[in-house]
Amino acid sequence: MSAKMILAPRVAARLGVKTCTLAKWRSRGRGPAGAVYLSETTVAYPEDEVERFLEERRANPPRRGRPPRRKAA
Image 1 (cartoon, one colour):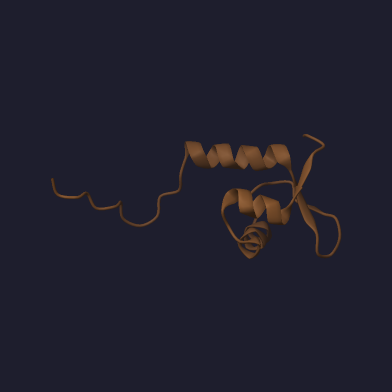
Image 2 (cartoon, rainbow, N blue to C red):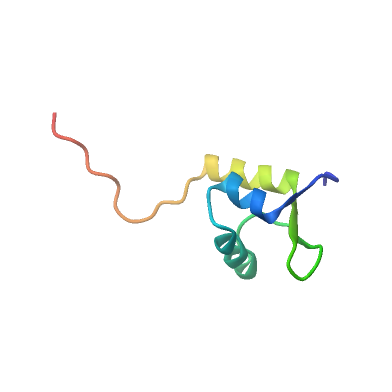
């Protein structure tokens, strides 16, 4: 594990979600692993875990709902 840590607001911005979404994921065991509580209000993530999470999402995007409709030619 790398020594470089990223604060939760930056992780949320990098993932394109709000910090409250990141907090919900953390409480449910989803999202990047290895969250470290630096204080009662400050959370950081290992940079390599954030990168791993992003790579997993690129390789296996979640499928929700119906696929988009194709436009008629």
